[in-house]
Length: 108
Image (cartoon, rainbow, N blue to C red):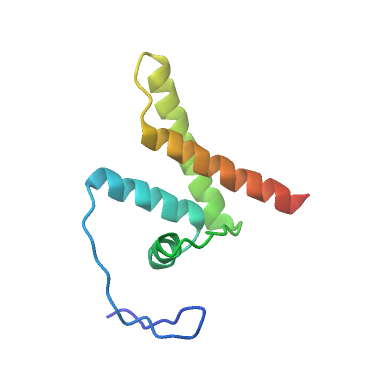
């Protein structure tokens, strides 16, 4: 059984919300969660309530960025040989660029 946790207003999170997604949508959500450095619960809750997802740079986020950039590079190399660009790849590149841009602003 998972441990109970509280939100930022010290309220118990005791309701379960579930929905179905395709395997491709699940993979995309997993990538975004890894890049955010948040738990899946916190990431989805913030996105559904239209709150900003602030990424804090830490080793886990940097590793996820490195891995996702490697996957993007492989996909771009495949596209270079005549493949088509899909929307999910463009969304992933945009998210990575936003994260890196935010990290650059913090360091300045």
